[in-house]
Image 1 (cartoon, helix red, strand yellow):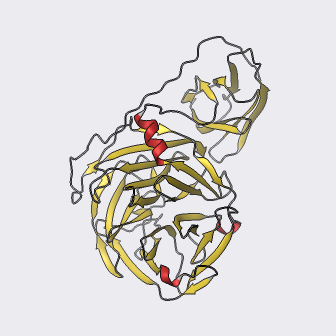
Image 2 (spheres, one colour; image 1 turned 180 degrees about the horizontal axis):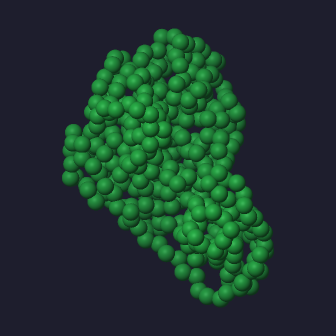
Image 3 (cartoon, helix red, strand yellow; image 1 turned 90 degrees about the horizontal axis):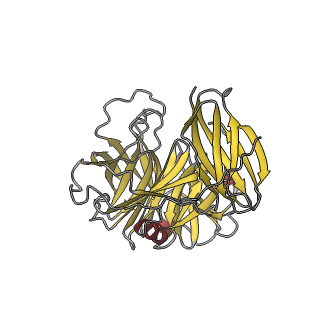
Length: 409
């Protein structure tokens, strides 16, 4: 690999403003489509909170925090069980089994003061007519030890606006992986494979069978996988991904259940590529935990602080990464070669990898940056690689970053 030394000045770009450009322009009862500005976003790297999680929850999907413990479940095909995770070891300390229940596609869990609500709402094919939420009384869950619960309740529902049920694997707009408890209702945020928007539905918490109508549509800019609401701080979080990269939305200072009427901030996680984030919950008024199932990472928990995110947004300190690795000249599209300059790294030694969409390593290398050199160049020949999306990972010390690049000949 050829390294070219260049001289030059380092320029750092900062500056983002965050508010809802559609603020106060709609009512919660409307099916208004809320559009957001691309400026309403920052980029951060969440802190690793706990890794790895127990192997029994390698497909952890939903997440809640209750009685000082983290509660989760696996998604489609998993056991009909809720697991309590120790916050220090990541190991399972309690297993709560729902007798005579089935985990067809459990995707999220939410709670209020008295109940857990487990959403069997996954619908990748768009064909399901048996969507349901299991309502489990917290009073039936012991403080310690496992339990089997048969006295759960069922909330069944269907979408009023779904008229066709033909199979459209990962191409339909009636999948759902995000539910949250708010007041006397459960709110569902759809995972729209085709449009990458989300529709919001309100569902009663009482057991029964319901037909729900959409209340609003939001430009999610990706596929939503989880949600959580903090009533004390009046903050809503939506979690998702796009092009194998994770992100979250933070909403606050909104009116009632009109979640999109207040402040809106998108937080991109550009270093979390191929990290399948599936669950999210508040630990307190500020700390948010994010779970990922086994993917490019072991099943793990990550953490962000909402006060810190808002501070960075309002003080125009967006577009930063906590890794101390700074790049220049990363092109979005290349043909015959990929050329990137490293401006700053935390350690003298660094390594790089180029991977494809299946996370297969195609190119790798390692070098040392001399302390007197201001820039180091990575040059990768790409002329023999097929068209498609690729990922460049650069690591130095304990830090790493991942950047997307498309090869097009």
